[in-house]
Image (cartoon, rainbow, N blue to C red; front, side, top):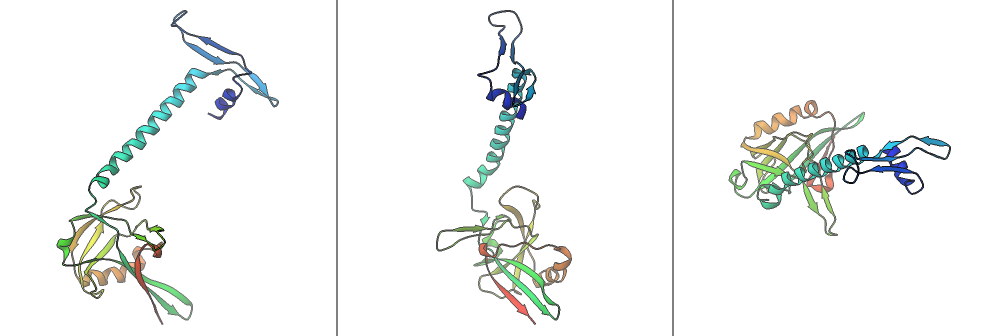
Length: 214
């Protein structure tokens, strides 16, 4: 592509050969003849082959973009399953050797119960600040716990479990909502360090609390 681009740059100063079967013969030909530029020799280039290659690339790229747009159309038509308001709790333990993360837990609060949510929800933590700046967080954790609004973190009534993995390029992660209780939450905390070796979180995109334990 780069070499062809160099040819095109000098097309006004380089001899070209064009044969059109519409007028003469049965063979189409478009050749940019060899030339020297800055001491470098550029050989003959069959322009038709390159033009077809570029055309195929453009068509494939456009088709890929349109396919992705079509995938997102349902999200634009119906956003009732979207959840933007998530909360977090982070506990950091202070030791003689310094500070270490104990766990991070994520929550969705509901007014009445699990019936407030669909069986499948799409999550993108998102906050709009007073200055109209928007902060979002590419959520890559497997569980979000569900509790009633203003209740204690131990009063868990359900959890949302990740369904479409973390490698997808979709903005919204898909979660399945099920009932669970405090024992599931306790197990999550106990296993947190084992399940999450590296931690990434955008605290600007969520409301939450950080607790430091001595």
